[in-house]
Length: 578
Image (cartoon, rainbow, N blue to C red; front, side, top):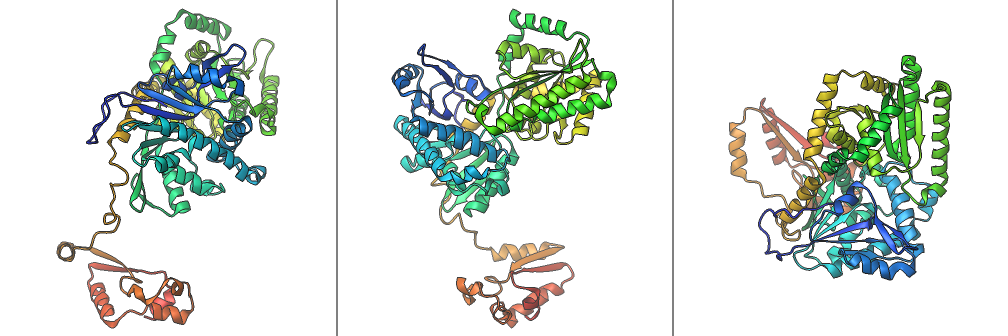
């Protein structure tokens, strides 16, 4: 999340002098230490942004034993954070099983395992309970004039729950992961309920246009609603859609580069890898990050460019993100596969003094990460699907004045923003990926500088603060959702015959497109049941055009500068017989 205290835009009811922003997140960004009765704030781009908000009430689930609930609530209340506690059996299923395993997988184009589909109703019940609990806390906190900003896939039902409780509430929702193609999304058994939940918001935000388009398409195909440019319409109700890519706080990284601690780590790393080019991979250890794809590309590169053996090293850091993940069979298989590839490459291309891949499956401190970003000659991101990937932005910020190369998978949201300042790769095309690695290492300084300048300018302008200001300004400026479209506006305007006749006379070339049933033939000729009958004789009767209409159509078609197109669901044989 993120926010701003910037001015609102457009005319609106008088706001309270201290307008608050109630931010809801699937899980509060804290790590609890039950023994010491303390907690620390978790890292992450969105989590860090939450700390900079003004006049904010933060609501979210906290995974903690019952005995800790009281002191956690009291401590967090001091900073206007409101924890939502759930029984462990409900909380685990809500956050880990349904949100992070099931929804996360489908939204990242990974197949839905049959055992997940089998337990869907029980898992969804826990998800619904959690969403209701969080929505209740928000509703009790809210007062007229407050904005509500709901974040991400663990809270897809919250907007509509709030809308039913507080119809006048101004609600925004932002999805931080990809929204999949409607062909993928449709496999979810609870597809309608999730979309209904999101459409309770006044404004729904996505990182890139592709995700917004997929969301609109899913709403149309699953719910049968109407889609207008950047808007979903259901009768008199509507939901605005916007594209608003998130960024980072680059100043935090630029300041860290000036510290003695980082400079000492940089000198040590430069000494350790002296005479070698450094490729960096920094990923959460997850199927979607494409770490094996990156390793296969390195292997192909070294195989086809033996002169680079001993002169390049990949530092691959993979940090765990899901407490339950190490227990899953898929996670263990990914570990085994990754270790096997690393061992094979090092065994084949390593020497007594150097190994081509240094692989660490552990977390690193912020200062160590900044130093690694600074030392690396290129950053390699090979995600097979990624909502945004802010690691790319962080690397660009740390390369100011050094011009390292950003190698970016085309399947990341960041590729749409930083594409002109990076080398894009398809992780599945190992040969091309390997060739791109070579080009990055041998790229002329002038080309590196050109790419970096574009990326750096984008990162400095499109910050977390810019993202939050843009979204919240748009949310504030929207007209009240239930009064923007009245019943008459939802219907097409009546045709102005005089304007059409004038335009027809003035036009040099004309195309007339008209429907058959309900336009040239009265719609009363068939009710809904009759339309389902498909016998040729009945169809012929149904689409019978009067002689008067036939003459008018023929007269128009005789004009060499006029083309007449009649649209119908009837067969060519039926139309020919008329």
